[in-house]
Image (cartoon, rainbow, N blue to C red; front, side, top):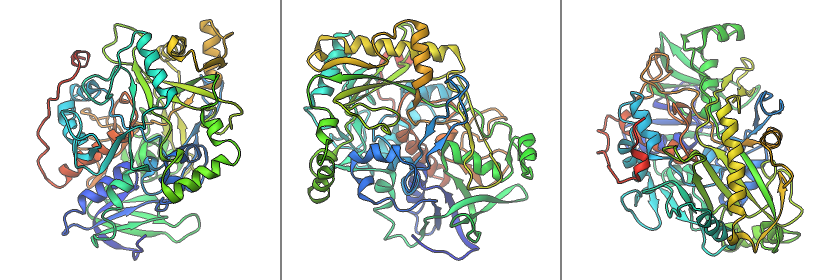
Length: 556
């Protein structure tokens, strides 16, 4: 958007217009006496494909304008496969390409952070910021906000696949949960969505679009690739950026702070390119060491996912709804009327369940898709069917993000080390059996056809494990690579200040010390909301002790 002269100065320079960067840019620029520059490597992301919720499949599956389309290094415990890692590019970041499911995680996830010594990060501390960010179409209550910028809605009623799944879950003995962000997460039920009046409501739509034209103190520089932080005497004073490979390098300076919001892959990469990271690795890569921070790029956690897929006995899946000329007609209908199948994400129901009864909170999440979905929707279906995704919510495996080179345009080396721990393998295996139990219930019998994947013949532990190794993929929730912690090894403290470097914070999903139990967009927005108050010197919002189910109150 805005052009600036090299060497321009602002109070705050934000790197990355993703879920966190959008929030910070909007909140900090509320003060007309504060100047803010927001650097984003992509563009405005206002195309029809982004705005139309049904475009999610194309956005996730296609590397390019809207999607960085990273890959992991070969994964030792997944038959040495390289796994596709979509990440959003442009205004809104991954909130512009995600599945639009609004989930906060379990209340106890945040109490665990507090019990790790992270003062101010318990559930009662963060709930007010979730609520401040949110406008729920049903209105506010003990758990939901009203009047915030992030619109949250319910999925359209009546789709037989999703209704049947919820009934089947109840028949299998699980509770029905009307709001996974409310009193009780555990159970089967409908998802709440970041969709407003049939339009994707990304962080950019919520926080940037309403203010960009009216705030001269906010400058958004699109197509600006951050290559290095400018650090002088252990203080961050600015950012070097360019328009792409071979383009002139420009500099922008921060009078107060530099705020890095690049996400779980690119925030640690930028820190390492700037000399903040494990000293031995930086020296090996040829980067001068500014601050030896051994845990930058460590602690990578992600939700690994498997898809159990069934043929459907009735022609009511997205295959029939989009076959032939119907697909372009959906786009045209949406373009001219904002009606029809383009208005929603077709991810309306799911579950949070325990693989073992003694657990204090659910350890798997289920997403139901009214379509055959293989390899991130990159394999086009040839029949009607439905897909039941299951991901492990709290993996024990930990991975890394490292520099591939000193070239800022080269993707980092991403190694989640999926399924390195035996408990992760057991949990994924158990999730397949839980899905089969639910789908086998009477409520789904009128739709249920043969099991396509893994197939009825895959039964033993060894057979299921082998199938998972061949087919498991990410469901797009990497966190933890610049973790906050009370210990000196943690790259950032509880105020997300980078240890050893003044004037520098990291504010995004990379700071989560442990992966929360659910989709990560809403928690990332919450983190930025909370930090915007802290940066501005405002007192934190009062604690909110909304009631939660007893299983959330068990001590760590």
